[in-house]
Amino acid sequence: METEPFVVSIGITIVLFFATLLLTSQKYKSRPNRFLAASLITLSLLMLRIHSVLEGTIFSELLDFLRIEYVFAVFLYIYILEILNVKIPKITLILLFSPFLFFSSLYLFSHVFEGTLEHILEITEGFETYMVIGFNMFVITSAIVKVYQSSVAMRLKKWLYLISASLLAVMLFFLMLEFAELLFDVNFWDSFGIVMTLFFVGTSYVGIQQLQIQQEQEAIQKVYRSTKKSDVSTKSAVTLNHYAQMQALMLDEQLFREASLDREVFAEKLGLSASSVTRILKEEGQTNFKDFINHYRIQLAKEMLIDVRFHVFSLEAIGKEAGFKSRSTFYETFKKEVGISPGAFKKNACVL
Image (cartoon, rainbow, N blue to C red; front, side):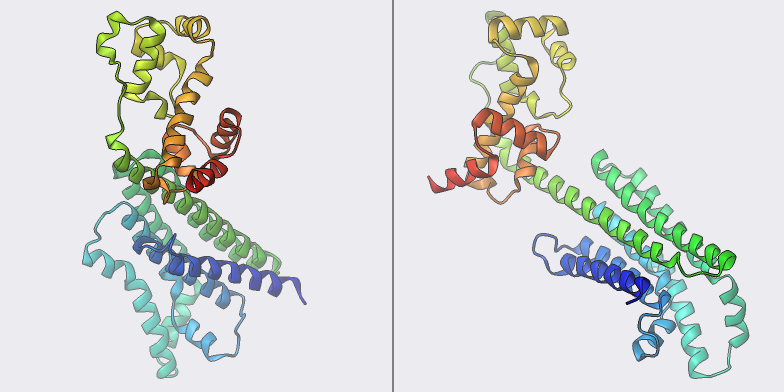
C-alpha cells in the first residue's frame, strides 16, 4: 500500500468520525455543533476531491460540480456566531453562499451543455485556488472581528480565536501546497494537507471540550446561587481577630472560587499587607495561603460531589467552579486532602 493514499484515508476517516460524533453524541449534540460538523464534512469531501480518492465514480463527478471549497469556512462562521448568540441577517447568508451557488451552477451548466462556458472556466481555473483562499480568509477574518466585538468571557474568546486561526492555517497550507506543486512538481507535500486538517480537528475538539466545561460552570453557578454564607459576617469584623476575619471573608464572599486569587488581592480585601497575611496564617492557622484557600475549594467540591443536583456535571467543571485552574491540580489537591480521588469520593457518596 502506498503511503499517501493510506494517510489520506486515515485522515478523512478521523475527520468524518469526529463530525459524526458531533451530530449524534448526546454530550456534544447542539445547534452550533451541527455547523461545525458541516464544516468538517465539507473539509473531508474536499480532501477526497483533492487526492482523487473516488476518481472515476459518480460521487467524484458530483464533487467536481459542487464547489464545496467555498462553504467550509462559511459553516465555521455560522458556528462561531451561533456560539456568540449573534443572529445572522438573511442577506448576509445569501452573500456568504453566493460563491458556492454561482461556481457550482457554472460547472454544472458547462457539463450539461457541453462546450458552453468553457472559455469562462478556463479563465477562472487559472486563479481559482487564490479566489477560494481569499474568500475563505475574508469569511474567517469576519468571524474573528465578531468575536472581538462580542462581550463573551475571555476564555471563550481565546478558543474561538484559536479555532479560527487553525482554519486559516489549513487554508494557508493549501496555498503552500499549490506553490510546492508548481515549483517542485511532486505530490509528497499533499500528505501535509491532511496533517493540517487533522490539526484543525484536534483544535476543534479541544475547543468544544472547553465550551462544554464553561457551559457546565454557568449551570453550576445557577444551581449554587442559594449557597449559604457564613454565620459570621465580615461586617462585624471589629469583633474578630485577623484569622477569623479571613475565614469569614472566605465564606461570605467565596473568594476561593476565583482561580486567579493571590495573596496580594486577599490582603487588600482585609486591609493588610501580604506579609501580614502570611504571618497570621502561620501563627493563628498553622497553615500557608495556598493550603488555606485550597481547603475551602475542596470543601465546596465535596459539597457539590455529594449533592445530587450536581451529578450531571463533569468532575472537571466542578473542580474549576470550586476555584482550581486545571483538572490535574484539582485531582492532586483533592486526593492529598481527602485521601481518594474526586471520582471515588462521588461514587462512595452515591452508594451511601
